[in-house]
Image (tube, rainbow, N blue to C red; front, side, top):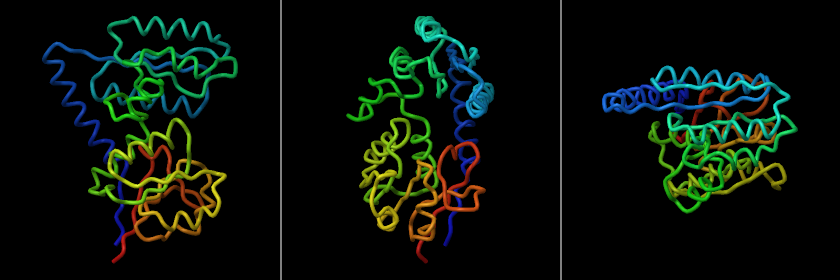
Length: 251
């Protein structure tokens, strides 16, 4: 039996729930606002920023957009972040990555106040994730957990293989799965015998663009794979916006 998980449908459900929660908070006189900073005109970044603006408008929170030119200096960006840190009307700050070469992304991430770091990239929030304390969590791993939970897929006791070890997705994905009592293996582009490792997985999450490596194992029983309009392999990333995930169960 094949189960299709519609990422767009679940995303809409979450936004509808948040819309109701925001409305209740407004009745109590509480407002929220997200500040999004984009440096340059990277096409993918522009799409993500636009999606965030739409989501803010839909659920009813404020959206402040700062679209800075490509030649913006690191000092100028840090000054803006510091200004937003001190603005009580701003609840969250998001600096869209990647940044131009003249700007140190790590320095900018560390400059964001941890309590406003909605991306969950600040070392303090990463540390909270590691030790199991509440805090902001990277959105793509959090979205994957929501997709699985809301589809009735149990992670406890399952062997979850993650292909990808980035600080943004792979590593936090592993930590979130551990919270769900899954057994986690992290693989990457240098992992040996990757197809064989994939065959041992109950849940397979691919966050690195090496879809051609696992193309041969698409039909593994009980693996989660992603459907995207590519003629080779599987790819799981940014599904929260435009992808469907499916799982193939034994009959």
